Structure formats: structure tokens, C-alpha cells
Image (cartoon, rainbow, N blue to C red; front, side, top):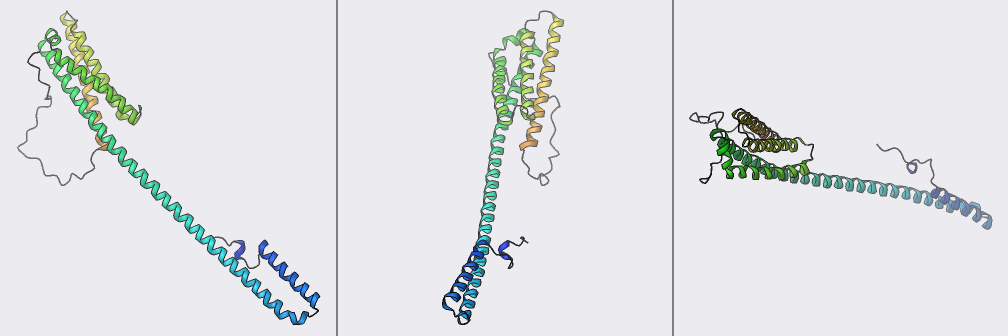
Length: 259
């Protein structure tokens, strides 16, 4: 309940109402003095007083109605404003999620392209040796181009999510590991001694392992952030004829015939 306002208390007279009573009293006194017929004017003054009270009551009632209407309209406008703001915020959130999903899809594809290129370069290098690996210019170029794409994507993620966001940081770390990997390939071609060459191969494998770990972490975080929230309980069971590939199997880019 709202507290009783001054104009709702019969014992309280507002300045406007007090002025009206003063005018009525002054008119009554002046009339009695001028006419010297106070007794005959009493009914008239009583009627005038009743009319004044009725006017005051009507004025109070109208004031309450206007106040109630104003408060109701204010509350309605505020509720409409809040609903409109909530609708805009929700629409902005949905648009942000859609944009982020598209960006993360592009980032995941870029990581896998780089992963395939790096895997092909590593396979050529570790199986056939540094001298042959250096001749595989196409594979090396593919890996470097994939790395440049990761550079651009890392900048986009940092701008979209903020440089301190886990997704942006994870992607940036994967990109750094790829750079370490590519430098290891280039440096291995300068090693003439067998022991130093083998050390470079180990560094190469460690760099690829680090890169692959951050790729998988990025995919996991991205799926948790914007992945589909559909119920998978109704999915059919997997076919018993399916045989999983070996744990170390991984598709690689096929070398070009000229390499």
C-alpha cells in the first residue's frame, strides 16, 4: 500500500484549499456587514460552504486520478523500455554467438590445414632425411603459408575475444609451436653431423607434439563455448562393424609429384 498523501487526510488542508476557505469566509463576513441580514444569508453561505467542500473533494479526487494515471503510465513505459532493452540485448547476444561460431569454425579449419601441412613436412623430413626434406619446397611452402594464415587468425581472435581470452591464448600458443616447428625444419638442414641432426629431429617432434596439443585444446574449449547444445541421447548406437584407426594415424597432405 502507498502511504497516505496529504490530500487524502481530511484534517489536512492544502494551500489552495485554505485560500478557498479564506475567500469564502471573507465573502460571508462582507455580505453580513453590508446587508445587515446575516440571518437570512446563513442558508446561502451554508450552501456556498457546501459547494466549496464539494469542489475541494472533487479536486482531490481528480488529483488522485491524475496521479494514479501518471504512475501507471510511467510504470508501463518503464516496463516497455526494459522489455525493449532485454530484446535488444538478447538479439545482440545471438548475433555475437553466430559471429563467434563462424570465426571459430574458420580458426579450426586453419589449424587443421596447418596441422596437415606440418605433418607432411615432418614425414618427408624424418623418413627421408634433411637433404631430401629441403628439396621438398612445396611442402615447406605450404606449411609456411598455413602459418601466415594462423598469424592473421590469431589477430582476429584477439580482437574479437580479447587477448586474454583462453581461446585466443590457446590459438596463439598453437601458432607459436608451429613457428618453432618450422624453424626446427630449417635449422635441421644446416646440421651436417648425425648427432646434431638427430637432436633436431627430436626438437621437431616435440614442437609438433606441442602444436597438436594446443590444437586439441582449442577444439575442446571452442566446443564448450559455442558448440551445439542438442540432446544426443536419441542418437543410434555405433555400428559394431566400425573399427577405429590406430591411435597414431593421421591424414597428411600428399607430396606433389615434383617434390
